[in-house]
Image 1: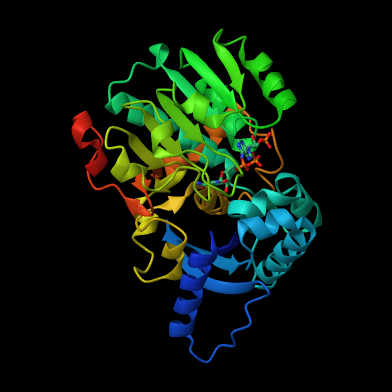
Image 2 (image 1 turned 180 degrees about the vertical axis):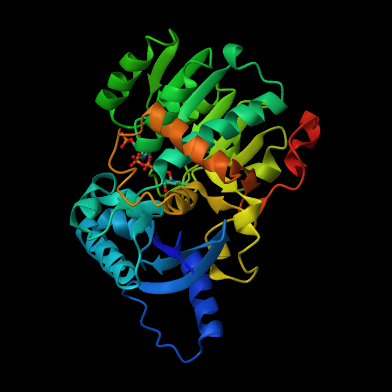
Length: 356
Ligand SMILES: NC(=O)c1ccc[n+]([C@@H]2O[C@H](COP(=O)([O-])OP(=O)(O)OC[C@H]3O[C@@H](n4cnc5c(N)ncnc54)[C@H](OP(=O)(O)O)[C@@H]3O)[C@@H](O)[C@H]2O)c1
């Protein structure tokens, strides 16, 4: 049977996550050596679609986000080693997961040196985040034209494309990041679409007045606490690791909070074994949109570098990824803390939103 192969590079989210993965690996292969300092093949995922097999080799790059940021040279060298493992296993395309697409100027360094085309998955992440925010707002009857959105990490690759896409829908937009100049440049660009675009360096100040909050930063720590949010607001946290304190769900039942960039297609999710290590990196029943982007490109035989660097995501590319996602029945889903929310979001009284 004809087979298309791609690879996806993952990394542990934090120390606890890393220990959990190591425990699983020891249970699966008790005799395996404990030296996990170099990247290694974690698991192979086979998918069947329209009579064609598509296979993904998941490669684990054993670095935490903080380690990658602190020593980019080592991170790039280990990511390149991961791409070599992928090449030897027959991949035609490589998806860069999490921080492997942030270091080295948004993955550009890796793309320049890797023997295979790569994608950060940021285009589909951005389009699925925008769609999820619109879906959540519609279901809770929020009038976007009269609402304020705060985008934390607005000048980043995903943040800037979401800002450009959302600016025409909202009555007011607050762009948040640390670098003034990049913030002002983006704000000037967006002011032709919406007169009420402002910039802010203090995330908590923006989130206290925003009706909708999107966090999509490369910060490795929590940026927003439960008390920093406006009553009854919607919060979409697309950052990995998360930027929103996990306790928000219990401390603020008035807030609808969910992870952004999580998508699902029954056709593909149902083909994954329930116990496979893939679920240690994705909420069970869903997958990160960056993984889905690499899968979709492979299904279409598009083996060229797609999303890479910063600022290259156009609205046309976002539309192209949305169409591709629709073709294979992918849609954004709502999850929090690794668990899919059970109930549909519609018609839920504010007082019950926390139990969705
Ligand atoms: N769900 C998914 O499938 C998926 C897919 C891809 C990526 N992601 C996640 O999305 C996030 C963003 O990725 P990206 O590629 O867009 O990153 P990026 O291009 O590096 O952008 C990061 C943004 O965060 C800002 N930032 C960093 N630290 C900050 C802080 N402490 N406070 C406020 N702003 C801060 C940066 O601006 P300044 O430096 O000026 O502050 C920049 O605007 C990452 O967490 C990544 O892991 C998720």
